[in-house]
Amino acid sequence: MRNVTLVLEDGTKFHGKSFGYEAPVAGEVVFNTAMMGYPESLTDPSYAGQLMTLTYPLVGNYGVPPFSIEENGLPTFMESDKIYASAIIVADYSEEYSHWNAVESLAEWLKREHVPGITGIDTRELTKVLREHGVMMGKIIFDDEPDNIPTAEYAGVNFVDKVSCKEIVRYNEGAGKKVVLVDCGVKANIIRCLINRGCEVIRVPWNYDYTDMEFDGLFLANGPGDPDMCEEAVKIIQKQMSRSDKPICGICMGNQLLAKAAGAHIYKLKYGHRSHNQPVRMVGTEKCFVTSQNHGYAVVSDSLPESAGKVSHINGNDKTCEGVMYTNAPAFTVQFHPEACGGPHDTAYLFDKFISLMEENKKCR
Image (cartoon, rainbow, N blue to C red; front, side, top):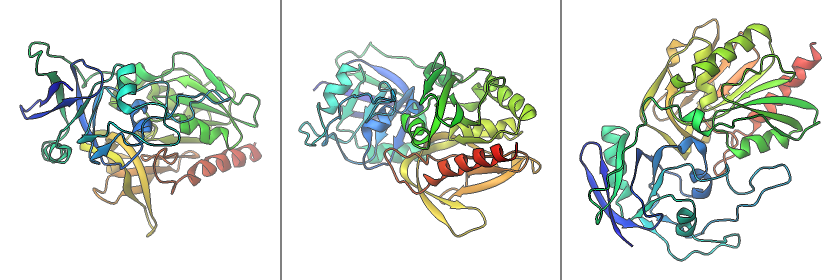
């Protein structure tokens, strides 16, 4: 293992060993407090451009599952077609793995997909630095190549455009309810949850104008980066809402895009929400859910016009907006991930709610 150094933009350094692909890399350094699920997290397109730090100390002990594709065209054990995180940072990488479904080690997978990995880092201390200062840019430099310094830009980059599909993809063709899914960086399990509920899913690029298409419901998917870079998507959403009252559901980035279309503002969180244990309370009740989340931006709660809707869920830790129920349209969105793979399944019922909205909408026509 070669010696490497993680250098944060404020000059803070963390020294460790390389166990992945041996190439310097730069990106936004973020932390994830989940205890498991690194295959799903690494393949989540929402991590594009980021150096993912895992606070759980032991990583790699259950290896990596096979990259198999189901009949519906979705990967069985991953959330997309490849690793999207720019690097992974862990405290203790387990070279030996044991799991009935593992076919290779985490190191072998990282090397095959050209993704660096660092071990031996005090990830809890790194997390404290990020919590105090806020998310920072960082560089992973190999100590024996001190002049090979990578550069990366994060602010101002439209990562949604980088990860979205480039043409229409259809799943479960001929099913009863047609759902147009706007791909901002969608996780495979979101599509699977819709397919399993009898929907035909029409996956379109993030800036595709779907307003003249025939469909029963609109689904706005998750994705990476700054939602303010997606003005094309916002304008198309506004166009759709002005022409039709078809049901709309959104997750994560989808929550932010629909809120922007309704007139709300977005801001960047100090260090984001990336974990499988974020507490979320349903407004007006004592009902609380354990949720999986991965985002660095949030909706400014009091910027949402009263005529458009109201905040439906809030985060139990920092009281940020976790969902919106719209009153001017049959629409609702959440900031967390009800498909949660891996993660808790507390809020999977929201997919059923979306299906019910489409059925009710059809009856009224």
